[in-house]
Image (cartoon, rainbow, N blue to C red; front, top):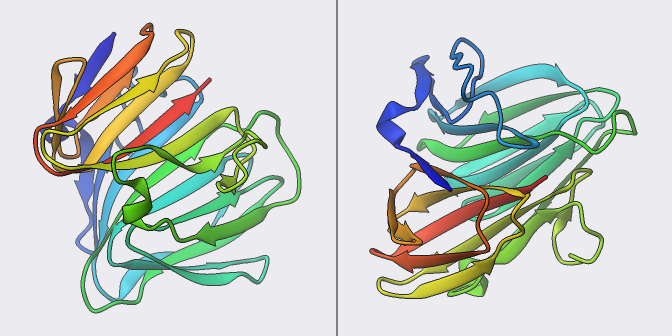
Amino acid sequence: MIDVRPFNQLGGANHGWLKAKHHFSFANYYDPKRMHWGDLRVWNDDEIAAQSGFPPHPHENMEIITYVREGAITHEDSMGNRGRTEAGDVQVMSAGTGVRHAEYNLEDTPTRIFQLWILPTKPGGEPAWGAKPFPKGDRAGRFVVLASGDANDKDALPIRANARVLGATLTKGETLSFPVTRERHLYMVPAKGAIEVNGVPVNARDGAAITDLDTLEIKAVEDSEIVLVDAA
């Protein structure tokens, strides 16, 4: 099954400094049919205006992954961490028993991110934060694991969830296969470009909820940048 959720049909809000689109129910957007996809609870497509951002606020018992599409995000938290994550790179925060954090765009141009929330395998634990560059050239024509709860994914940022976050870049006409376990929940969004997934068109910033398949066959209709979550 491949359920395409077009970008222009997503929920969202325009707060001036923040233009947000929500693939799942979030804040004032509520759709009982789109509460989550397996353990994937949130996929927000955010545009943050220059010199603005999210002030300090709390989280607990959630794995929060930020994929920076354009610009850069500056993170601060109650653990004393501070870091700037640039376009193409990823940061993760395990909220654990509780943490306060802020996410600012301190650049002179808008920053665009995907922020994903994934349910942890169990509640609690000390909060943690980390960030890592993932050069797009390393993802050319293949998926690279960006964040993972599998200890075998040694080059990925660790998360405390039964899930993996992967990224790939494809040139127009290029194809890529991805093996699927039928009971898993996959959610794919092209950050840029346009693709076909098993022949089904998925355009930039559309979501594709995928399950009950054995293999994904992805074809780039345009030069494309893809983010994929594979979750329980």
